[in-house]
Structure formats: C-alpha cells, structure tokens
Length: 137
Image 1 (cartoon, one colour):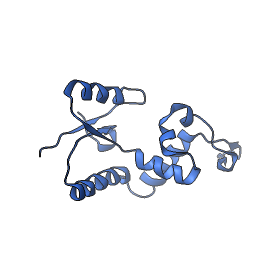
Image 2 (cartoon, helix red, strand yellow; image 1 turned 120 degrees about the vertical axis):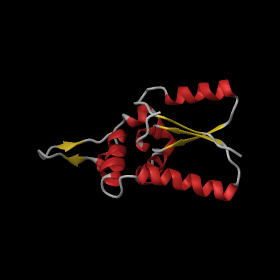
Image 3 (spheres, rainbow, N blue to C red; image 1 turned 90 degrees about the horizontal axis):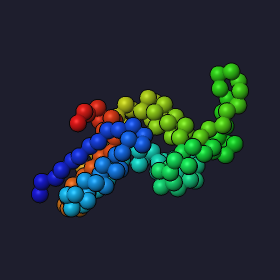
Image 4 (tube, rainbow, N blue to C red; image 1 turned 60 degrees about the vertical axis):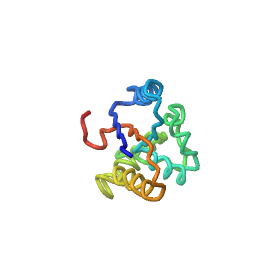
C-alpha cells in the first residue's frame, strides 16, 4: 500500500494544525499526526510532572515552573523558568546541541519505522514542523 508523507513548516501559530484539519476534511483520508516535539514533551512530563498533552497549551507553555527550576543568569541574578524555556533549553541546548543534531528527527523516524514493521498497517502520515527536517515544501 502506498503511503503519503506530508510535512509542513510554519512558525508558532502559523496554521499547521489548521492546514491538516482542512486537508483531512477535504480529502476524507485519515492521517496519523506526528510531531517532532512529542518525545520532548514526554520527557518534560517525566521531569516536571506536567502531563505531556498540557505542553500543547499556550497557557502552560507560558506558565512558570516551580521555584526548584529557578536558575542564576550570567549576572548572578535568579531567574524563573517558563515551561517553554524549559523545553527550549532541554530540546535545543541539552539534546540537539549536547547529544546529537538529529536527535528529534532520529527519534521520530525510528518510532515510525518500528511501528510499520510491527503493525504492517499503514496510515498516511503528516509531520508538523518540517523545519527540523531541513526540507522546503
């Protein structure tokens, strides 16, 4: 069975979800939504206790973590950390810059490849935020 892979790149609030909602409605196809940041949100849940799905909400992303997550800046001033800043630091500085430049790409595609081999059932896939792939579509 042939699969379609659709990847979209847009900034925050750029309409990625809306694009795919419209595509599903017009095509009548079922798409499996994959996000590069999902694994990051699962890790953030384990570290903070905040449910991964809540990291999808702007109100949560902009909220401050408890004071045990405060840090000192280069001037020695204590700073509070938002959930968004936490995910950016962990995802970019910690994982992508500290571990491997393609950590999130590898994680996503590793999961897809293993799922396909095990299930032998293919849905069309959509991937949000193709900036991580380095693709222009």
